[in-house]
Image (tube, rainbow, N blue to C red; front, side, top):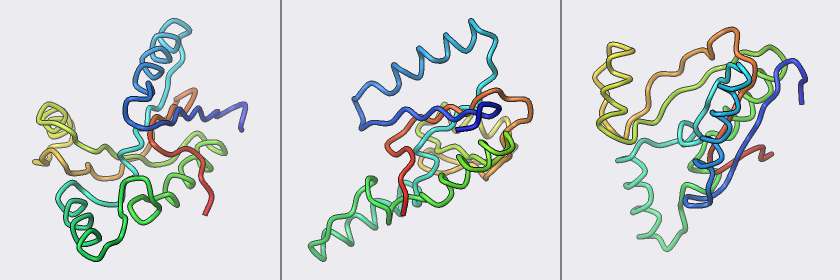
Length: 144
């Protein structure tokens, strides 16, 4: 890990407490005047909500297992690239998965888009001047 551009990844399944840990880190960052680039793991899923439901139904009809946990449903290469680039330069790209109407409204206002819950925002650059990349999600540093 880079001392100049550290990456902190908190991983776990839904209900494991990653959001609680994220909130604790947010308090620490604020208290210590640390500027984080926060990245959510859902942003590195391969499919938006409706295509994911279809892919899961298709797999089920064939007797196959398909879920958010597997490599076929995720962009592990993009996540690995983000960790590498951030560690080297403090840069990289991220996007947001819009879980709710509130999140969609917030990002639509910010970006001038008309996205709906279950969709991704476009990829955008990590802002300059961040001190740490903080990632929270299902997957951390998996290798292919």
